[in-house]
Image (tube, rainbow, N blue to C red; front, side):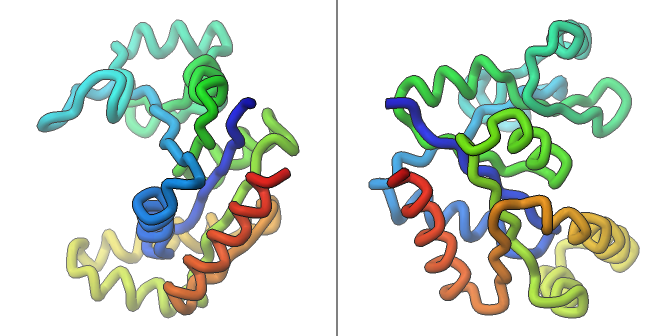
Amino acid sequence: MNGKLIIFSAPSGSGKSTIINWLMSEHKELCLAFSISCTSRAPRGTEQNGVEYFFLSPEDFKEKIANDEFLEYEEVYTDRFYGTLKSQVESQRADGQNVVFDVDVKGGCNIKRYYGDKALSIFIQPPSVDELRRRLNSRATDAPEVIEQRIARAEYELGFAPQFDRIVVNDDLEKAKAETLEIIREFCKE
């Protein structure tokens, strides 16, 4: 039986990665596996081709775009691409994996549009922009101007929330994790 598709999107600092990592480590029964994306950047550290990413040259990436091989892709900087191959997702689904996408809002909407009811799209939402700012500040990993850029981006991304199947407001992490788990369990039963 083919696996299901679960799309996560959220503004930076919403807790999306924390929730996804918890689901994947604590709920093996869900058979969740990350979609392995492609990038045109070079591997970093111990990254391996076919494990963290498929590493392609910018030329190869552009050829795959021209051949309509991507579910979604983005050129983040000139010749720095990230994207999800249709063939890779189908291969993982055929193996019975429930494929998890951790993507930006546009990518999430594109994947949902392509797969329709075969995919579940979940938007993890912060309780407020002020709380998001507080979380980003408390991380102490970004300069104030970077935080303001992230807040501006978050305000833009929040406008996409209604296009997702489900919105989970992360005002209490344990509650958000439990709600997300229940949503996914229901979807995987169908």
